[in-house]
Length: 266
Image 1: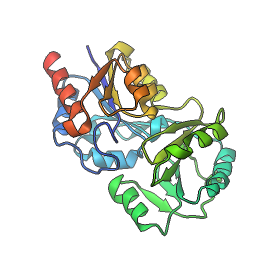
Image 2: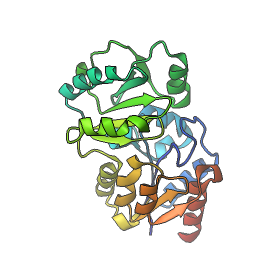
Image 3: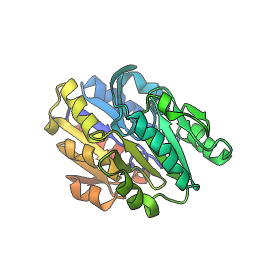
Image 4: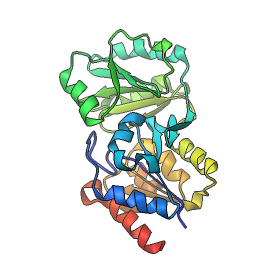
């Protein structure tokens, strides 16, 4: 019997950086709650952006945002993982070696980012991801309570990923979070750890948990769920870790799986 459903957003439920959800998801979330099944949006996105995305049902669901760095339920912050300010200062200097990238520093209130003159980037962050943004190329990140850092490369992050992961190994949890993104969290922080926190908080067992994902930042969550599902377009490692494969977001694989779940659990 499933009591908790968690799904990644970008690349799993919708296209990367899209601001539009499948219309069916809202009624599905309402029906899940009627049956005492918790629904969690588990994403690298910011909490406020996710809240806007799911606005019609935001008061009926959980938000695991910033790749597991923040957990919110009914506007109450249940968990936040804050990064050492010394690492933030070092990251700001390190990012300068990659002039083709933008650095973001996420707090529980807003996302601070370089790229104030890049209008297409600003539009994507505000209109696409629906973030609360502060654009300041000279931000002193050590004065912020940062829960996640990210580097964005429009042409794709993977050519740089190994070099970046090697540099921060052991000091930050570093994960590729989509074609243009690499994210950095406090060690031990990821979607899997956040999902385990939610399971403990709401007294839900692993075998009572269903999760969907597509990228490396979803691996922990897939493994923390008794019923881990990868979409058909997922990275190979995610498919190998998953118990089930569902159709892609273009074919509404998550939607169909939730519809089938509700049919089975009448």
